[in-house]
Length: 336
Image (tube, rainbow, N blue to C red; front, side, top):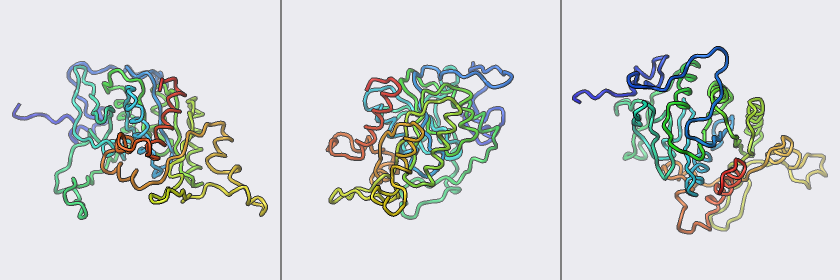
């Protein structure tokens, strides 16, 4: 056609009745309005749904979520990941994917796939700005300029967008779908709880007390939502020297037992491990603080994929993700 209509233009994205701009023609899924809270249901063709949350930004939750999902996919488990962070989608960058998803015969979005992992994100649906409105990276002139377009939506828009992402994606048969949750305990989390049945949640924290406090609030949210918490992951737990392998704890983990003589509390009294014990939550494992994990994420080749094959058995980073993924799989009844 001479004038091929863009499915997700800026104007259509800002329509309150249809924030993602899904076509109104054809036979879209019908969602009858109900009084009160909507009825929870399974996501079509998806056996298990696992949320990955931190309730705080900047702790590496999305990196862990995508590496866990890829760990499942590399084991031959049919896996998808849904980026539910409307305002700051990270999955397109982590999976090195871009472009508009196509629609199937029912006007449902077809996920984009890389490394054997299906994915959907708000980042795929936003119109690409002209180059004149983007900020080039002077240190990497060949890199695609960063987009300056903000997503400035109020709660109603976020709720409607989340509703469509949950129910208007054609995943096909999946054994497990990971939900990469945004920071906080607000609109997105409440919408997910009202709309779908979650099989469990993984909570990510760093050793710092300020991050752990928000992680514990996230636990409280899932507890009120009657969602089983599968366990807690401690990210950036230690730095392993690339030369000698010596492990250094960059962030405080709590005070050591021998410091009890000074009248101070030891690590068993506070910290991630102590909170897991206090809350009755399993500790799923440590993820090291390593520059290569960050570099892998930035170039769109997550660690589980980047360190597969050659020297695979010697990769502390990859093994850390795979070990956590195995524990999560067993907790939700997926054969590893």
